Length: 135
Image (cartoon, rainbow, N blue to C red; front, top):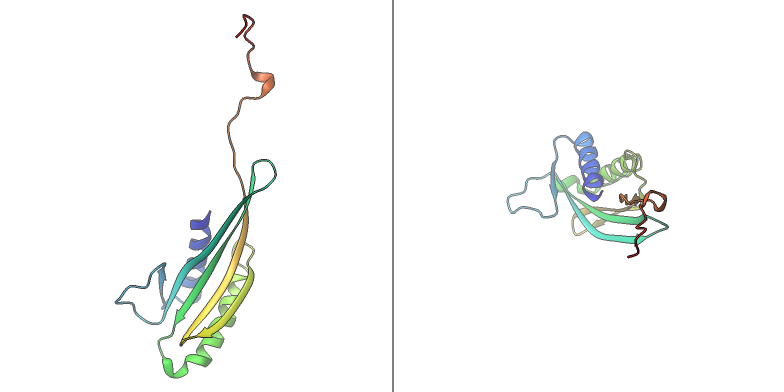
């Protein structure tokens, strides 16, 4: 599920900024600007009722601008566009989205809560055969 969420985010960034380079997890030494770096910073997973599991994954999207001279104005525009686009990310609900300028980078942080139902093939009690001969 996490890889599907990450791919939806990358697809949305590519749709919004086809000229930008998008990296996952680690920035290569020879990276090119303008670029986004998508990093998973936190995950949680908890058992719910029955076979349901409640989970969340937190991302940090760092934006590396091409032009440092217009960094602030460009960052405000990018943060507004990305925050709006992520709020409509396929069927995923984005929560706790923030955008902050830190160390000449724009960081957009957000959490994606989701649920999973783990399916197991089990034999139902009324379908079991009884052993009449004892054990």
